[in-house]
Image 1 (cartoon, rainbow, N blue to C red):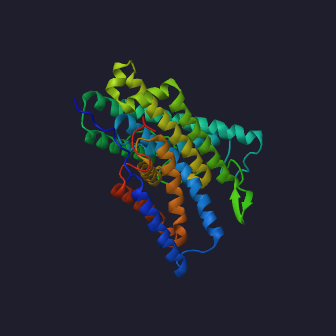
Image 2 (cartoon, rainbow, N blue to C red; image 1 turned 120 degrees about the vertical axis):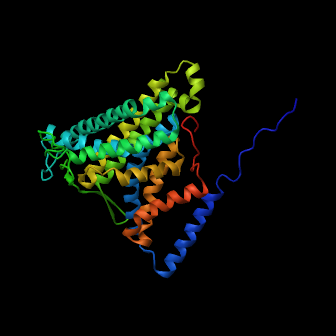
Image 3 (cartoon, one colour; image 1 turned 90 degrees about the horizontal axis):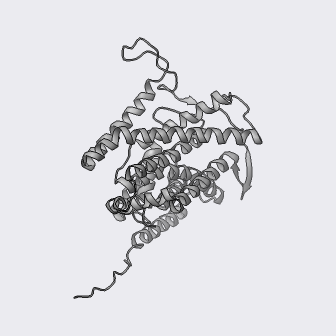
Amino acid sequence: MSTAAPPRRSTTRWIWPAVGIAAVTGLLIVGFKTGVCDNHFSSWLAFFITGLRLGALYAMIALGYTMVYGVLQLINFAHSEVFMVGSFAGLYALSKIFGLTPTSNGFSGVGLYFALVVALILAALASGFVAVGLERVAYRPLRRRGVSRLNYLITAIGASLFLSNLFFLLDGQKHLGLPFRWPNIAGPAFVLFPTVMKSSVAFTVFGVNVKNTDLLVIVVAVVILVALDQFVRRTRTGKGIRAVAEDPETALLMGVNVDRVVVATFFLGGLMAGAAGLMWGLYFGQTQFNVGFLPGIKAFTAAVLGGIGNIRGAMLGGLLLGVVENVGVACTGIRWQQVIAFLVLVGVLMFRPTGLLGEQVGKG
């Protein structure tokens, strides 16, 4: 018998992040000295606050990517359209149930809280059921046949294109030679979001105004993210998700219903995307059939940055990506914002492909 020494924790885990931080710090110093970067503290703080708000939305969307990957090792590229469905569901909940319009004065007090809660629940449920429908129709048949991951990827892209083009056609007109008009839900143009509350300054920090809409997005995101984290770690369903992510064969032998766990995973990810869709529409004031494309890619970037398959990694990655891409604007200009986000993705894939917190839902 031979005795092996216990595995040592890698001392190089944080080398590349440290190198990256040092490189960025050096570039900032050069930028300040040359005048390329804005040297006003208020500007940086404003970009930071905006980044937190965007990062919170990225984190909510990224959870769907990371949970599905953790359980099935599948990148569900149709998740961006699940987010889009949530934005439209929230829009029509506010307009049809509460009669709000883009030019209305909105609500205040108890009425505001009630409208937001109802719209949030309906948007989340709509996206959750769409995500479950995708799993049942598109992914479960593939899973039962034991196909390769490439088949999953192609199916996910096809489902994404189907949903986005379906909403493109839902403009109240006749299509495909059919004798009836399609429902007037989306269409090719932007659809304006109803006004739930008037935007106003909540408070000021070092001369930077923080609006009530910023607070709404950040607070709702934090509450939902914490609730999901606790659900996955403390409930029986959450333990089942972690068990299947850790070892699906052993989990099945221990009596875990894998199909039920997969459905729960898609449903929870859909709930997060639907809530993010509503918050996105409330903040930006509009939605569209392809509104999920850029947020979806950035949320995927956030999931990779934090560690694909790691729930807390997705949260951390979303916040970091939102802050980095917005603070970077202080040196590069707004036109480079998207470039910064994708440079982060390339850098992570090159130097730390497992992300900041590592992979797997079941670990961490």
